[in-house]
Image 1 (cartoon, rainbow, N blue to C red):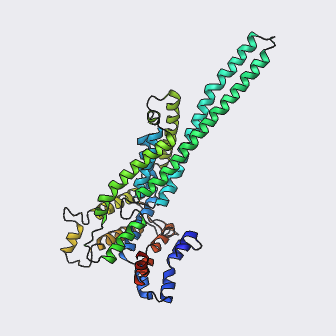
Image 2 (cartoon, rainbow, N blue to C red):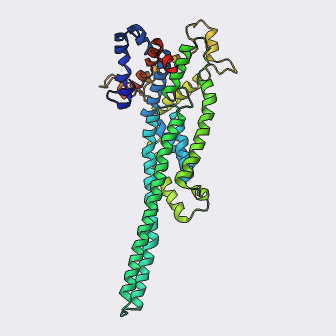
Length: 400
C-alpha cells in the first residue's frame, strides 16, 4: 500500500480500500472486522470536520478572513510575510492543508505581481527622463562638435547598462521574495494543521490508536487537551519559521524589511499593493445569509468541541453522563456534535426565501450540496492498515 500511495498508481481512496479485498484473502482479518475499521468514531469525527471545512470553502469565508487580516498587517515585506503565515496557519487549523495552500497561493501571487510591477514602473519613470534631458542639452550646446556622437553614444550605452543591471536586481529581489512567500504558505499550512485535533489526519490517527491500544485512557486526548499543548507549539514553530524565512529571503536589513524610513517611491509601491488586496476584499461584498449561517455554525461547533470536557470545569460530557443519554462515550460527544452540525449544513437553506417547489434542482438551495464534497476520499485513508499489522504481529516484528 505504501508503494501505491507513493506512486499514486491508483487513487488514494482506492488504495486505502485495498485492505477490504486483501486482508480477508490473506487470512489477516475477516471482512466484518475490516469494514468496522472504516466507520470508527475517529472517522466520523473527521467527517464532521470535513463537511464544515467544505462549507467554509464553498462560501469563501476563508478568503474573506485572509484578505481582512492582510489589510490589517499591511504589505511591508516582513509584515506581509507574517500576515500570510498567520492567516494560512489559522485556516489550516480548520480546513485541509491542501485547500488552504491552494487558496492562499493565488492571493500571494497577485500581491507579488503588483509589487513587482510598481517597482519596475517607478524605476523606469525615475531614470529615463534624466538621461534624455542630458543628451538633449549636449546636442543643443555642441551641435558641430566631433566628440558629440561619441559622448552621446557612451551616454546611451551607460544608460542601457545601468537599466539592465537595475532590472536584474529587481528580478533577483522579486524572485527571492516570491520564493519566500511560496514557502511561507506551505510551511505555515503544515504547521497550522497540528494545532487542532481535526486540523490534519495524523492527529486523528493518533487519537484512534490511543483509544484502541489503551482502552481505559479516560479520553485523555480531546480537543481541549490537544489544543493546550499543540497550539503553543504551533506558535513557536510559526515564529521560528518566520524569522528563518525572513533572514533567508529578505536579508538581515530588518529596518528595511519592516519599512522603517522607507522612501516615497517604496511607500507608493506598498500603497499600490495594498489597494490590490483592498480591491479583492471589496469584490467579496457584504456577508450574505449563507455566510452568516456557516459562521454561526462553525463558532458553535468549535466552542462545543472545546467545552466538551475542558478538565477544570464540568463540560458537556459531564452533563451527558448525568442524564439519561448513557450511550455518548467520551469521544461520542465530539462525533455527535460533528455529525449534528454536518447534517444541519445539508438541511439549512442558503437564503431567507427557503426553497420553492418549482426549482428544478431540489438541493441547489442548501448550504452544502453533495457534488461539492470532493475530499471524501480522505476518510478512507485513515483506517485499517495499522490494525492489520497489529493482528499479524508485523508491527512487533519491526519494533524488535
